[in-house]
Length: 398
Image (cartoon, rainbow, N blue to C red; front, side, top):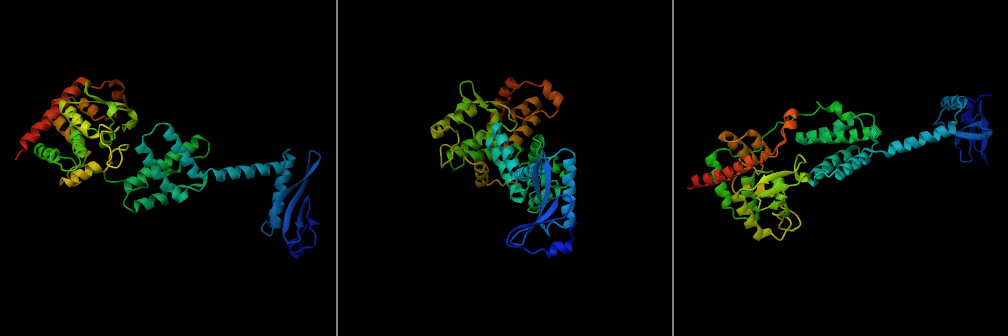
């Protein structure tokens, strides 16, 4: 006779466990401790087996009967409900084991094996750590767009709009990696592409007026700090490469006879090797530098260790000591100075100027056909630029 809720509530514990049947193989076991546990008895392959459904009243009578019916349906189809239950449990454990943090670590490891630059890896780890602190322990399949947006809003609330956008991009990259590996269904950051505040792009400050440039160059020449810092600023003005490329420069990259600096691809922003022609003025500065830092692998070693380059803040800090604010001039600004004045001169092919700056053509068709380095023109252009800087120094002489 089927059980009722009143009967179930009235069941009392005894010295030994005992069973009370419902129907169709469903029964409840009452333990000496008073627990009431649902079980289903069934046979498969001539063997009697038992399936557990949980404890009453957490699993109500109606729920237990529903679970029993589902198990009987599996049996009728030739399956084993006990085996299927274990497979579901295993899948659930695996699902909870595949957290966002675990996939972020796997994504970072992949990027590291691909040879991404140390600076790129450091920024990626820093960004993803912000996400992991919010929902890193959550299974990646359970992370939703609102959860991600809440994290991004907290970054925005501090006024860090560009950081929030970059964080969204990195979170999206982790999801796309998980999707490719069959561990997530979609990338929820796609729905957030228009949800964030678009930051106002402010160009890096740069001096582009010739007389003011001459005054800056004379100020740099008179810098009273470390000789390596002064020479780094002087070389930055002459060679117009990115500050990070210059401060990480190594002696084995320079051929002073052929007058070429060969920067390996892993240190370049666009991951492509880049050659820089060295005018005579640059050669003189580098030879002077050999007497100061020739014992290090780096041209510009840190004061604390010959095995590390100067920090990314060193050159901008030197400009501040010279009296130039961040709204007047930055270390990166020397590139804009060169680009502006070289283009205004009308003497040089704009493509050669862009190639000297290691910019990549954005037009895919043009990029496919423009495979040259404009090397000979760039050699002449950098000789002209160095002489132009010397002339501005002379004209700025008080």
